[in-house]
Length: 273
Image 1: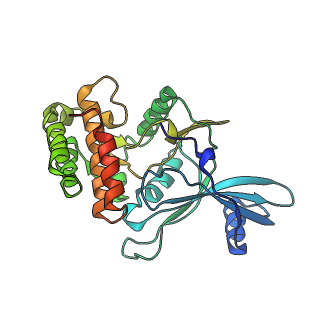
Image 2: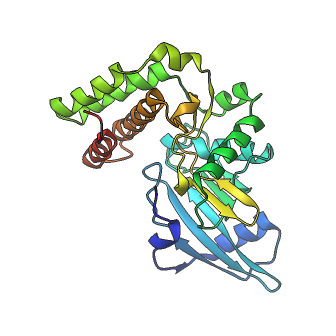
């Protein structure tokens, strides 16, 4: 369970005037000033940045979220606009900047509605995810065209072995045993759906409009059990292997340093001998 966002904020700084203009254009309101507060949360992807932007105008005031992403992990800025258009329970996208993948210096960004900081319960999170999947059930090809990767259980199992580059022999043997314990034919037969990839109460927030799902950087097309394994032991093991695969991939792509990535993998391996 993730720590609530509000408990991990840094002091506010005054945002530049051009940013005030961006907020004004995106919201269609008069904006006199803005202040940006960095939300220093445990990001689901290393290198992403989130700021809560407080804007004030002559007639109204409010907050929005400004998110920036590493180019190598830019699934969310491509995916969220589609989910919002399909009326899935995700933040409203007020503005976006998604440069081409061949432009390495430009960071994708989103200006989003602010869902607040109140965690939703697990049941609400699962219900919101089911609604999201239903909203894009016919959009598989579109999701792929947006860059949402396909990660069936067999591929997750194989790519979790990237952790060999980060672990000593004994710890990597635990990853191998975990991968070997999966009933891959059964998991593959479950079918493919949109997977959030990090679903817990830290990424499901409750506001006046209901539950909102945030943190879609690990999204992919794969097995639903990764998000909600319930009492399924194969599902729990697959979810653990996906987390291991994710952190090993971050290290491979230089998004996260090797030692912190290894520590996250070892944390995931707790309980698996």
